[in-house]
Length: 77
Image (cartoon, rainbow, N blue to C red):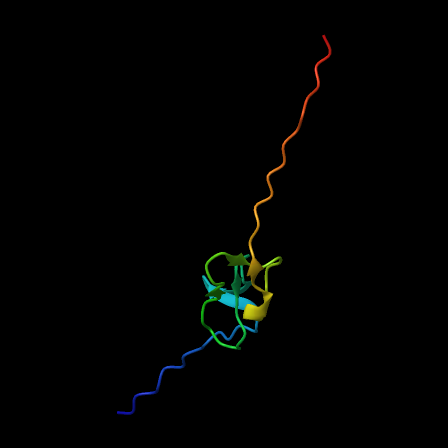
């Protein structure tokens, strides 16, 4: 009796996209992926983030700045 080999499908995601729940999705902010593979996206170094989703290089990671805006209110008496 012959046994047939099972076929296995590997989902390969392009650069800038990671594998999640059977789909390729753009890497989230603060992540990138430079290779074609089914691997997850890589995190930027601590204190750095990306400006857009789907980045393909660690060079896309830049310093993260928090902008705090304050609003002055003048009250006439």
